[in-house]
Image (cartoon, rainbow over the protein chains, first blue to last red):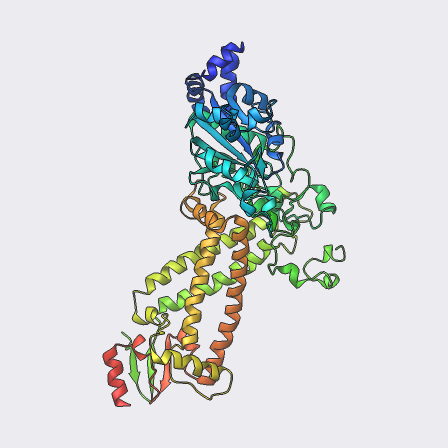
Amino acid sequence: MGKTYWETFKEAGISRREFLKFATYITGLMGLAPSMVPKVVHALETKERIPVIWLHGLECTGCTESFIRSNAPYASDLLLNLITLEYDETLTAASGILYEESGKMVRAGLVGHLDKVVEEYKDRYILIYEGGVPLGNDGKYCIVAGRSYKEDVIELAHHAMALIAMGTCSSWGGIQAAKPNPTESVDVTKLVKKPVIRVPGCPPIPEVITGTILHIALFGIPPVDDQGRPKQFFGNRIHDTCYRRPFFNAGQFVEKPDDEAAKKGWCLYKIGCRGPTTYASCGNLRWFGGISYPIQSGAPCIGCADKNFWDKDPFFERLKGVVTSKSWCGRRRNHRCPCRPRYCGRH
Amino acid sequence: MVANVVKKAFYRFYLFQPGLRIWHWIQFLAILVLFITGLYIGDPFFIGSIGWEANDAYAHVLSMDLIRLIHFAAGYILLFAFLYRIFLMFTKKSHFSLLIPKFWKPWFWKGIIEVLLFYAFIKKSHLPLIRNPLARIAYVFVLLLIFFEIWTGFAMYGLSDPSGFWAKFVSNWTLAFFGSEYELHFWHHVVAWVIAIFVIVHVYMVFFNDFIAKEGELSSMTAGVKYFPEGHLPEDCDDVASQKECKKLREQS
């Protein structure tokens, strides 16, 4: 039995008052009601810190970049106090064969760190996948320390307590799975038989990453929807939580990215905003401590948390290949278009 | 009580009770409203609220909010009309059996060829049928399309209230089935256009049959009856009348 959170906090010299404040803070972060605060405190006092193995596959490590910018709690808090991040290829200071290798070391009479962790925390660790899995050429397109990522994904899942697919790559396949998908990349759920919690986003919001890990650490698997996404973060459309929603309801739309309406901050629906079809917390939490999010910055959402978003181009049109009124009043005849006299000739 | 078949100089087939006829026209109006409002929601082609503050625009002009409200209201009407249509299947034999493409009957396959030749102005007439095989296929198909529109429509509608009835029972698995909501929007659009094309073909075919075949195709959805000249007893007579009745009529002719 490892140390509980409260014991760790005490050792670090954090007062009870600070501890309770922290508990209240993360209750809100996890999307729980204020009445849950005592339960969170209780969980923090009794649950041991949870070991985490974080694997990287075919990806850009953007999710890790996002994760370390988490504001509430700070990623450093989460890494050093709340979870025991035992294995992570990008965030650890240690490197080299003793850290990474497993099979070769066993043969040489030594045990690699990864094997040691798996042995020590059997059936207790959280396994986080970051990155798609290339199946083409027997998984040779993604090899970490001599092992193909494909093997790791399957082997390490056997003894994991919970599996998290972090980011769009491991959740849906990612950019590398875009047509024609030369590496035959797939999401991890294609390989793993166990239920996987999907935290899609390219990258996911830092607070969503930490919130999901925390929820598993304290209360186990969070409630998920039919696609395995935590309901508290992926239950709402961006559109329904968007601060530009009144402009949509009033029917006030941006016609092209730099027109008068865009300067007034009207709705980006007509220039292909994917807010109405994307489920994420961008509208609620926003990014990096609530500074902004794409729509607030004036760019239409591209739906990066959505399945196969990379193939749904053009990003700046609403629906690909669907006959709409735009097709009636084509660009060539736009100066005669009876529907939109104000905007004619501007395209 | 209106008799199923009246024999004068013609056979008079009573096909549809008033309930079904009212259903047809309510559905027509609902689809018309849904299609027009749906076009605006899919691509808002006019901006009616210029000069208004967004928050004031709702009450004063034809705004997206109002158009969506009309769309949803019409959607509910379509849903309950559809459920009512299912109920109607149990009220009269012809309400149900005229919908079935009876591909196990010889007249079905013969009818397809003859009706196609008739529609192409190659043949002057085709074997007498109350509802020809092409129409049977088309009507089942369009009812499935309407069901698809109701299903995808309410799946999208439900997700604005993630803990509500529609989200709980329809939206979640639908979303998992389609992959993402983008596909849902896409297919909702495509199928709406297929229904629009059906309406065009349907109206043309009804008037064609009414004027050329003179069997009262149009009157079947207004008065509920269809007429066939004596000696031209429809092959699918027993979809409307009882088999005994049809047999008797067939022996007489």
